[in-house]
Image 1 (cartoon, rainbow, N blue to C red):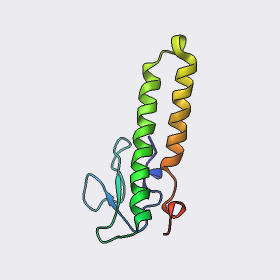
Image 2: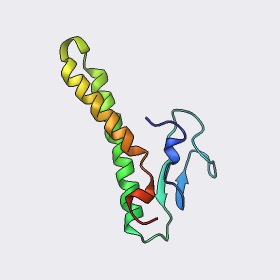
Image 3: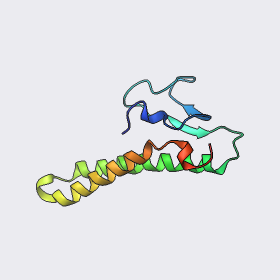
Length: 103
């Protein structure tokens, strides 16, 4: 969904997990990184941010998937609504951690 730079938005102080250990970001445009709080991080806001970020990404993917299944000739209104959902959730995916809580 998001481009390579959006995937790392808000990752300061967090664990960035990629296919290759120690990589600075995704290796391809199709790879997604996982951003989690560090093991010893007890700040609930960091955990909530990581969970919400993951959910926003999944919901954006599902909205796009549904839109792709709807032919515009038969379900133009529903398809447009699904694409609006996809754009909304994609914009949430890039929200930086400092806006989600302390950090």
